[in-house]
Length: 115
Length: 111
View 1 (cartoon, each protein chain N blue to C red):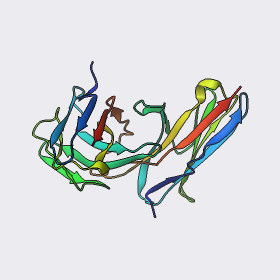
View 2: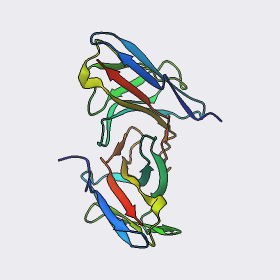
View 3: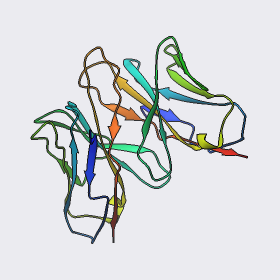
View 4: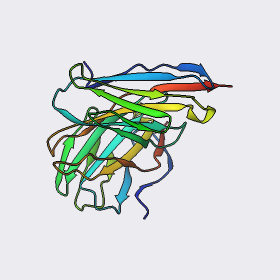
């Protein structure tokens, strides 16, 4: 199993450019998440999805958009990139059942620099 | 108040020492608790789940205190390879609850 796959691994953007970070999971997980991690800091939740067609904001959603048209894919869109969006972005997925203890599996991260 | 709070450290301890971290959470309805480990420039990975009765996995022991709303991680006989950032993770009861990560505690083991 590939698990959670993120592309690209690295990217340099110019201020004002847009891009989409791709995330795919092959574990049939219903929940998917996007986090950002600034240097020396913890993970901050950007957006999450509890299933196809359903997304919700996390702690730091401004400047980002997401969609969840399929169970497998959860792309993150950056519009009008700003230097403050320089960070490492992690996508994660988990299976959530009412009575289950869940583990989140992470992709390897996308290191984004906005210059 | 943050939903999940951890002492950021860094904790710098000698090899062989015992070290403990605490993590507090604000939502009393939280139901699932985990400790993740994150190595430098890598993705977080599950270290262990935390069960109500407490649980042990080798040198690692996790405890949950619902009354005081904190979880703890104890590492005995620490190894150089234990150097990492340890993330506390909390999830609520409902199926719509999101997983919230603490900002992590940095641990450095010295020879």
